[in-house]
Image (cartoon, rainbow, N blue to C red; front, top):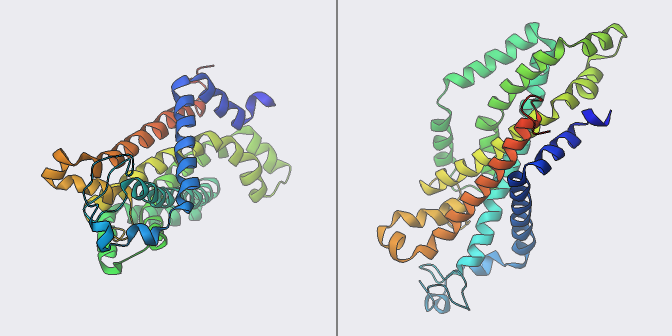
Length: 291
């Protein structure tokens, strides 16, 4: 029935929450601008430092350089676009892959139970005991310098899927005792068909909500690691590397164009994702929906 269509429920919840609707539109516009503009910027030219560029070093915002230039004379507007694309690439890759892996692990663990659940849960318990962030920092140091793909794979393998897997396991356990699942089993429907055709659609809202949380968290994780000097090399711009300019007290106060635009972009994107995530979280709970 249309009333139970998860996509329509999620869209109706966002549409009736004007803050979430504006946040979604703004986030889509930001992402579209970044990904449409970035291919027209030659990263090799932007990151190259020569004598001509040094003549324009540390220029404040102007008509020629709307966001000013950095200590090497590089255009901060173009740097911001490339940095945002790299940071979003990492966040999207990690969030999508982590959600997919966590979804598969959680569904199998919660639906089948028994030995399958015991084995998968022991693996997740082992991960819970390991200081994961310390391992991430260790591998970043060992593998340095790394690129966007290597950085993303490292975060996927060590961090991104665990919390999603536990959440999906709980949801699968709840769905597994529902009457429609028992009826399907009685009719002889294969388990794999029940999982992906009947159980999974009833989890779309919570999956979408969890995806937004994961996306926002890895925008923050990438920024934090880059701010600490970890992650991508300095010749590969990211939002965290740009914000790291704020570590210099003089630049933080007197050359705010070096770090403030990147910081504001991070805050705006995180708020947009948060507002949309709240609406999707309500969509997953019929008692909390606005309509």
